[in-house]
Length: 406
Image 1 (cartoon, rainbow, N blue to C red):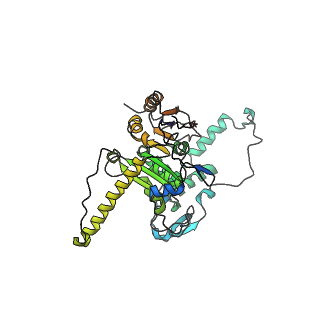
Image 2: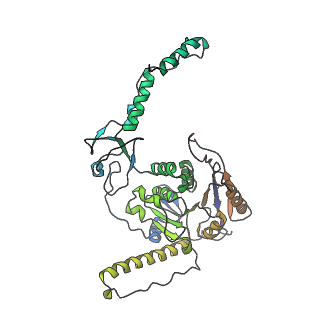
Image 3: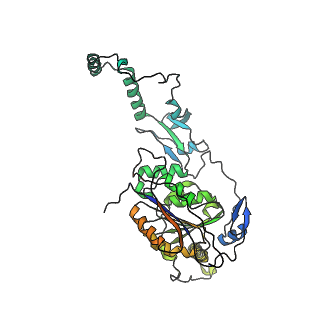
């Protein structure tokens, strides 16, 4: 069965878990934001190692970074990539002397012709046409014989420049530029997600610093990258993936700092269930191991302890939101992770097929633990040449207060 790619939805609801979860809530204001627990308590749970490191200037290209290169459509030369280290993003460079580069005026500015001419006085009147039918036919005949107009000459020159241009522009990897690359090359990798739907998911889920988020991501890490960027290294994200190894490929192109990476914890689907107990780790006497064996032992031990600490953090609960962009049925995902959310916390679900979310909405409405489940369908400032035709509209979710008697 073909999936109608013109339908892609966000389902946003708010949980109302009927149990006494607010007894031990302590309020504290952090930079004008009312938090449900103290920031120091979050940092203890997350166990983030705050690394004191100098922040690199993101306006310039540094070594060991990913860089997007905007290339011309035709033939292209070669250059040494080390030559652009230390150069600013967004400037255009031209290759000369076979493999040397020099900075030039940005290509975008060259196409802007400053002129005072406008069409303010233009009136749509057939009498303004001075050429007769015979004149037009004669002009066509002259054009076929090689008498090119200035306009056709300019078009020819521009086409040849695009084909043989040796100008490129380094672009800084941001959430938008990385999304644009994947959406153009292979949109199915990110499940046809548009940038406006991604921004709405992050807004509706109230993703912010000092929050704990659960993310089920089958978009190659696009959704998790957006969450990490908003947290900025303050808070925690648990990402759930399918298979033995995660496929958050987009995340590595974002050039995140170690501080931001340290706020991410990763679990596979097999590790989120309490009944799935890991095999105990075989601790050994390190003095009896060779250098190669010791290195492998430390890596295996660190991985085991990381998984155990992440499982403990998940089962402890107290998360501030749930974002889902998965190939699996949302109902089964909700049943697994609802117990770990705080009361009155948002849930945002993305799926390319509207019918899947309609079933989920019915499931939520007959349940008593969800508040105001809503499916939306519209479009926010669409791009006329986009693929998929994904539609969204703004959603408002009502937050519920839980009483201790509930």
